[in-house]
Length: 272
Image 1 (spheres, one colour):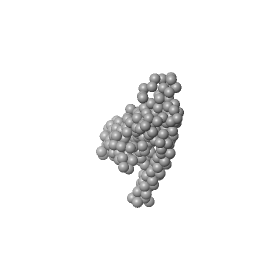
Image 2 (cartoon, one colour):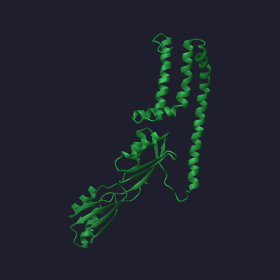
Image 3 (tube, helix red, strand yellow):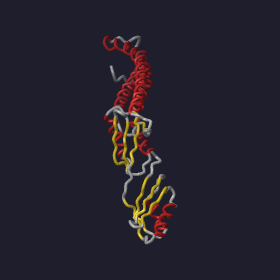
Image 4 (cartoon, rainbow, N blue to C red):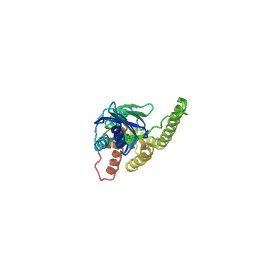
């Protein structure tokens, strides 16, 4: 993707013979990053191809120093970059990613697909993929440049790769759910008698401390990916569903700590 050839078209004034065309060609060829130069004396145009980034200003200066005048002719270079996006959960996530990518100077069009977890970006400049990745990561998601399709790739192979990723994520989600339920079941068994019959066993302080301690693995181990995404989205002022979940669980956990403080007599009890 990054080694793609780019073109710049210049209108050259002052050329009167083949020697002039050769002089312009030599001047442009000496500019660092230029690959090939083709000068047409009849049309008065120079086509410059380059792989490394080369500014139009550098080309104009080179021609001016050779004794001619150059004017860039608008020919925006278009290329398409495909990114794999990790962490999107809903339509709000898609909107956030699209907004972040669209705000990058040089981006012409952005299409984000939640189902395939991919973003297709059309640029009108030699925009590096790393800039687009940084824009996505800034709003709380992970972005990687998708591998270009190879000759040996087939639709079936691409589908197999996507299926493997989905199976891996489902397995990870299942493991997190098991960890969560290992600690949630004791919480429910301990909490329901208190909620229905008012039975606090063995006493209020031990009960509140037990609730808080049992909730730690469920939140910080099983729920870590969600909490991490929610905090990052809030930090970058791009709240998503993960942010709401993080806010709700955070407030609930804080109320448990407040209850313990009240049991110890260091804070007033706000809840009966």
